[in-house]
Figure 1 (cartoon, rainbow, N blue to C red):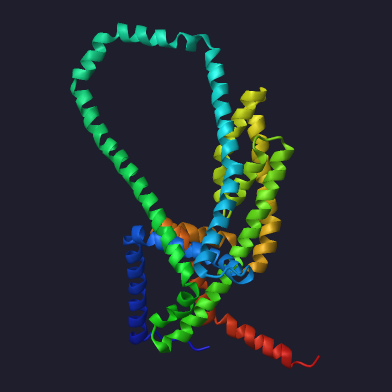
Figure 2: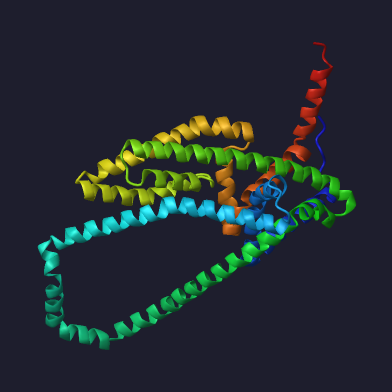
Length: 370
C-alpha cells in the first residue's frame, strides 16, 4: 500500500480547516450566553416535534399553533405531575428532619442556656468587641466583604436574566416548532450546491445516531428509575418512589444520577434520627442499592440497549460531555452529543469509509448462491 504524500496544498487545506474549527469554537464560546437559549430551544423542539405532529395529524387538531399549545399543556401537566411526586414529599421529609434536629437541641441542657451564655460572653468581652470594631482589621474585613456583597447582587441579577432567558427560550422553541419542517428541509441551502450532498449524507447519519441514542438512553433511564424504586422500597427507604423517579430523570444525562447521593444522605440521616437506627447502616444500605443497580445497568442493561441502538460506548459519551463542557461550558453539554456524532459520522463515512465497506459486503453476500 503506497503512503499518501502530504503536499503543500493538503497542508494548507488542513491548516485552514483547523483554524476554522478553532474560530467556530471561540465564536460559540464568546456568544454562549446568547446562543444558549437558542440551542436549548432547538433541542426541546427536536424532542417535542413528534408529539406536535401526533396531535396535529392523528388527533386532527386544526392548526399548527393550536397543536403546539396542546402539546405544551400536555408536557407541562406531565412535568408538573412528576415534580409533584418528587418535591412535596422531599420538602416534607426535610421539614421533618428539621423538627427532629430542633427536638434534639431543645432536649440539650446546653442549648437551653445558649442565649444566656451569649449574653454573658458579650458582657465579659464588651471592651474587646468595641476595640475590634474600631481597629484596622475590621476596616479591612469590611473592604473584603463589600466586593462579595456586590458579587452576590450580581448573581441575583444573573438569576433574573436567567428567568428572562427562559422566556426567550420558550419563544424560540415555539417559532422553531411552527416552521420545523421548513427549517429542517431548507437549512442545507446555506451551503453551495456542490457541497450539499456531503452535508445531506452527514446530517442523515447524525440524525439516525441521535435518534438511536435518545431512544436508548431513555430506556436505560427508565429501567434505572424502576430498579431504584424497587430497591429503595425493599430496604424501606424514605421517599422511595420519588427518589427513584428523580434518579431516573437525572440519568438522561449519563452518570448525572450520582449527584442523587446528596439527598440520599439527608434522607438516611432523617430515617436514622426518626427511628433510632445507626446512620451508617441506613446510608450503607442505600449505597448498596446504588452499587447493585449500577452494576446491573452497566453490565446488562446498557450493553443490551445501547449496543443495539448505537455503537457509542458510555465512556466515550462521558468523555465527550467532559471535553465539550470544558470548552464551551453548559452550552457544550447540550451540543456535546450532536457534535460527537457529527465527528464520528464524518470519520466513518469519509475517513475509514465503513459505510462503503458495509455496502460491498452486503452486495457480495447477496451475489453468493444459496
